Length: 170
Image 1 (cartoon, rainbow, N blue to C red):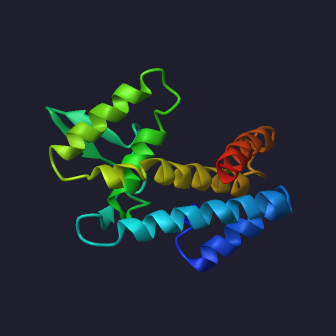
Image 2: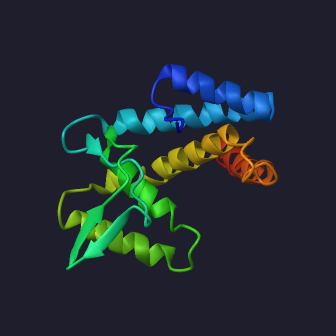
Image 3: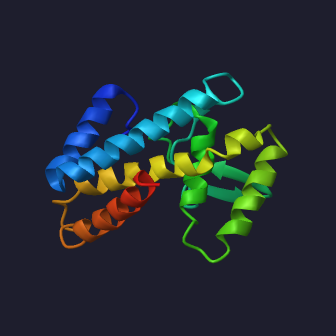
């Protein structure tokens, strides 16, 4: 199962996992990033306007359009969390595209047409994208012995750890 980094036990496991697979310094940077994520989650709070039932993996392969309506699939990561996380996953999954900025703007405009999203909360979108990045990295470490990942997992993880190092030092 994908590491959720949603409680102290998961956080401890994540830090240990990175320390063991990579280095103690990388584990310390992950711990710092988790602290930053927790701070953002506390700032947003858990009121009904910011927290509730979310999909948890809402990216372009997990929703389809049919007759002008969108339909979501793959609910195995569904649970309670910050609404902003669903926006972060969707945004994260297109962040490599040249038109990422316009896609993000369109997503946020569409979201705001349905429910409010303050500029203060939008400010935390990148932190929630960092959470997604961390979760994908942890999943990659967990899958490192899988035949499809054995040859590539280290380079993927190193790339993410370089990003984490950059944001941990800023």
